[in-house]
Length: 63
Image (tube, rainbow, N blue to C red):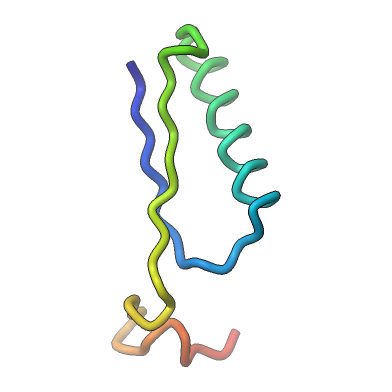
């Protein structure tokens, strides 16, 4: 049973997250040839205030 946990900063829409979950599920099914019912995929979101890149909080980054 494939288990896939995706970590990301919060802020995506429900539609975006659903599309990603669908895409990952399909990629696992296609690449491993396992039954769809055996695949588990979930998102672990965290605040941009709780994540740093190179010593700078993600919320303060200018992209």
